[in-house]
Length: 199
Image (cartoon, rainbow, N blue to C red):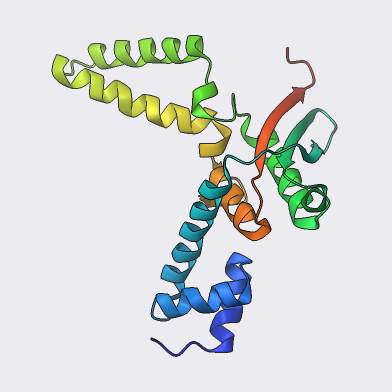
């Protein structure tokens, strides 16, 4: 095992907000490699999130974000298991950041499964037409369409979008990190985005 210094633990803690012992363990597991330790902690967050996924989330907050100029606003409901977690600064800040992200990116839905079928069908048709017009061989058109659809879904589904404040993370990554820190199942339930003059 690599020698892990207090300074290394402090740096990893600042980068990930994980607990001190988790940071120390991650650095030891990864031979002192800082980037690998960050990934290790992220994977741990994924594992914790998966374990907690089935648990009921009946507490939470509704957070608002109003963009400067008062022409754009978002309301988002973020749920958790207990009132105690709902009142923490980290939870409220997460909800506020998600509301701000929604204002900036205008997602269509939260998860891929919720993407409107009529929108997907329309996009598929456009991609098919483009592929045919560009003279691509018939046998690869389906692969081209699927690739473009995957990219489109990442653009319109909140959980798959790169977080505006840190594009290396998706909203799902951000949520997994919060679940790992809080030790509770947390979910983004719904949102509404309002822009003056838009239906």
